[in-house]
Length: 242
Image (cartoon, rainbow, N blue to C red; front, side, top):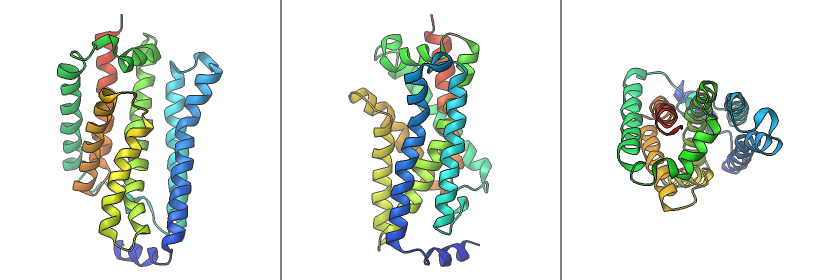
């Protein structure tokens, strides 16, 4: 099946692949940002809080994954091409679990308590978005796992790192460039405002990227990203909500 896919991919020129890739990445950013802007500007149903966070995660997942599906069809590929496979899922899941829990432990045991704790901008923002309610926390977890752990990994790791090299004459060079650009692109999208913000996003980004490149599948980075987001949200809620 893999051989058939490689053969078919040659029917799509590098130029056409690049155009489709750029269009997909730009439209993907718009789809990720759109619900944030909508709820943030309109303040509909309370704005960026409560059940709206669940809606945001579902919107991002459905629209971005649909976009990628359409893009891959144009490129004569499918989700398996970008690493969406359950083979070796137990091993990949365990790698992701260890990675996610390791980073969240470092954050909440060492880094966050020694860099401001509840006074940190990201922590105070998370507390505000959860609004002190169980529904708010669960909805935030849904956003972090569905919109973050699943959708962001499919988009930023699977699609970005796998498809961009197809636009290069030398696939190995393309892979190196795609990996670097993916890390910077993903980090920049989270809008870090200072050196601490860059550190907090770059470290897990390197981890998710390593897990994807090491396993050549999306399960490990999805699990690591989802576990970290879920655990970080729960710990923030029970530790810093006053």
